[in-house]
Length: 406
Image 1: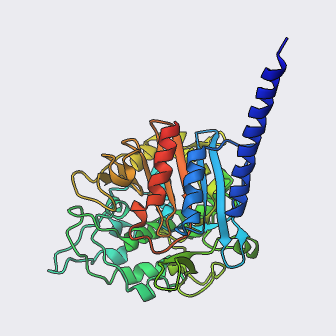
Image 2 (image 1 turned 60 degrees about the horizontal axis):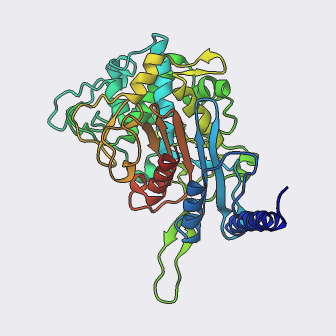
Image 3 (image 1 turned 180 degrees about the vertical axis):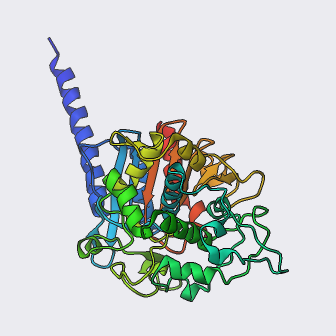
């Protein structure tokens, strides 16, 4: 028989545990977060994100960790709209910016799987207007699709104010064809938005579909990614998290968040369709939608019982093919088709495994896929003025907390 003193001790312990859980839930509520009682959560990740919200580093965050067929962590904290104190929700949409690039890479490789192109093709084979591209000294620039997708093409950029004003990729590519090439293709790494969009235009030519339709029919529909799109509906617009910049305190003004804009919209709205589908960074998505794309890559291209992308194509998305060329945006990385790959973990990536691949976005979003551990981590935030979004402490804290828990 259990003694009465022992029973009192157990009762006290249970009251203490209940109190801790209540405090945790209250803290999340005060920070605009959502506690998920029925899904796994890694407390260290959630705590780190809550602290960044409390410190006004970000307005809110959705963090999601998945295995090939499972969810290992999910947490939502903060606000979608700070001024109106609108809590962020798990189904919030985010502008994922350059996290679009791996999806573009998958589209290019799907066309290679079908024999409609090779990444080693000269781009002029599919876009005759590109046949006259030259270096500054007049030397012909022999650019391949491989160069486009690894940022080694040397293609120049359009002026920022007019880079996204064309109604179609065809019109944008015609403008790209008039720009000089800044270095011999394959000899340097320089991040190229025009290069990625040129690759998407090639997908249009060989598939006979506009790029937005191709992404919808060949990526989103098979993966049930119902909230991934270049053009939002009104219902999706209502779920779009606002973008913010951090304003540091000065004198009587305390540190705060100020609403900011999305560059690819050129002053328009996400619902405006009078703009080309920017393959370099035009997609909007949710954490759960993007996780489905990552899970497909973790399963070597399979999803819902179908092989959407060949295993060899997935290998091309996660295998460095830029040799010893120094690449950005953080040290220790190389580049694959459409993806950054961690060669030597260090700094912001020090806790991650070699061979982890993925991409970040300009407003702080990130997806890393770790084949060795069989997980993908998705971070959704919306902040513009990180000194270097790829090296943000928000991303680093997420990665370190996850790896400690695995």
